[in-house]
Image (cartoon, each protein chain N blue to C red):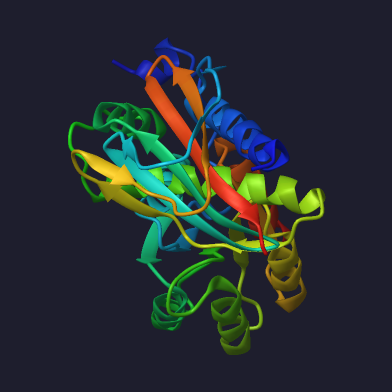
Length: 154
Length: 146
């Protein structure tokens, strides 16, 4: 997978998280995964189709999701209820929308699906024939992993 | 105790959401995200606007607009929604009331759709993530213009 696909997602995640959370953010080491991999507990997935195709996951623990939702709503949230999920959904939506704008400025044309949220313990994701690149993002509220598996359309 | 004369008021400003006659501007929120609806409602209510209705898709938004009309001053309209999207809903609302004041709410990257909405008759637009100052500025611009 070419790294130019991933930079827009990382940049957008940085911009949006900084803006909505108002906290320090640092990037961890990128790493590649090619087989099945565990996901952390609360995962927003966005599908891409067009010149490039694949999917992007925004993956975090339940605690981190609640901390982000609390910060974005300006109130303490202790349960992953509909509002908390709608908040994480909106976060994923804003990050992807900005990434797509950046990618489309680079000349790639494609569409994205609205985000969907998965929650649960011990989940795994498997991508056949696409390797996934993972960018860990460290925040005082916890860790968020951007997990991108996209390729150019054959 | 006559506090008004004893203490100078440091907050003379009237809330932005009031009309010159002192009543509140009435707003209908159309957005499928519970989070965004709540966010806009909080920003506007804190300035004295009255949220007279909310809807979760374009079809419901249109229905609510017709129900509320003429007792509604402004609509905030999301673009991507299930059933009927914000563009189609805007079109129908303008068809019903050509003076409707609709502001589009969009994530970045939907410039083409925003342009289309403005051509159809949306009065302005707000890009997410929502910023309190930006939201109030755009909303007031639309309300004060007419």
